[in-house]
Length: 242
Image (cartoon, rainbow, N blue to C red; front, side):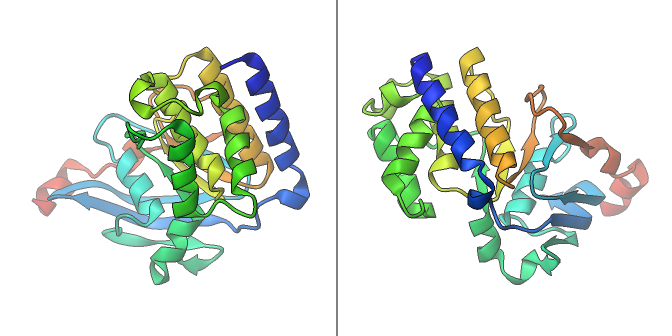
């Protein structure tokens, strides 16, 4: 994970932020959203708007619905009430299209122990569409996250922080306009945190957007915050739903 690796990767990211290579995407919005998991109402009346280049940080205590909201945004869960739109069109009408617009990074790193880092990223690119030059995209991702020296290392030999860098590199191998990130910097050292900041800034400069759930500072600068506690049901609502 030499410094020259990161420097080359960041140079590639800066090239990608050229307006000619930017995402052609519209605003993503939600209105009146409610989420029920099991028999528990997590939030209701929640709304948001995410425009190209935005970063939205979800905050709130454990169990407030941050991860569930990310799953709603990804089309993995259906809202109990309310609706989501992309460029003014209902997401519910075509959930498959929504899945193609987003890249999801959850708590699990999805690094296969028997595959090398390069093989893991190549597989992800084949599954999700790596673009016109998959090999170049993969090399750029390795450099941007400072893991070029680990390219031929099996997943079982990686530390937790290295696995997290591989997971973040997946976002670059198969580009999409919206990144949905659940605690993306967990396990990262200072260099890894800096690499995340660089790839996030480049993604936004290219017109991409980020929604991230976290309990810590992600270093996203001008990111807006959405506090899930503001949409928590009242005691009376919980009693009525029981």
